[in-house]
Length: 171
Image (cartoon, rainbow, N blue to C red; front, side):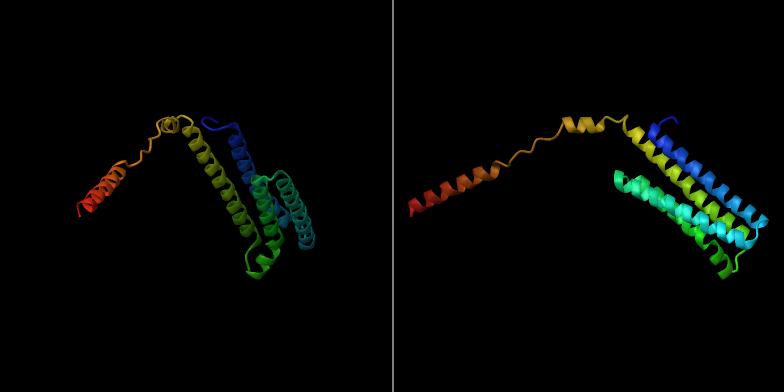
C-alpha cells in the first residue's frame, strides 16, 4: 500500500481477512442450522467454542511470553467470538430471537469492528508516514532559545545596599 509501512499493511490485510472469516463463520452456522438436527448443532457449537477458547489461550500465552499487546488484543477478540458462540443458543431461546437473523447480524457487527480497526490502522499509518516528511522537529531542536538570568535585580540590590550604607554613615 502506498504511504504506509509494510508492517501496518500486513495488519490491515489481517483485519480484513478476519472480517471475511467472521462473515463466513456466520454463514456456515446458518447452513448448519438448516441442515442439522438441533442436538448435533448444539454439540458442534460446544466443540467450536472449546477450540476458540484454546486458540485465545494460545494467543494470551504468546502475548505474555513476547510482551506483545497486539497478540493480547487478538486473544481478547477470539475470546469474545467464543463467548458469542457459546451463548448463541441461550440468547436465541431466552430472548425469542430467530437463529438466522441473529447470527447474521452478529457476524456483521464483528465484521464492521474489524473493518473499522483496519481503517484506524490505515489512518494511523498515513499519519506516521506524513510525519516523516516534516523537518520541523529537527529545526526546533537546533535553535533552542538560550535562557538568560535577570541581571537587573542583582544590580538594583547592590545599589540599594550601598545607598543604605551611605545613609547610615550620614546619621
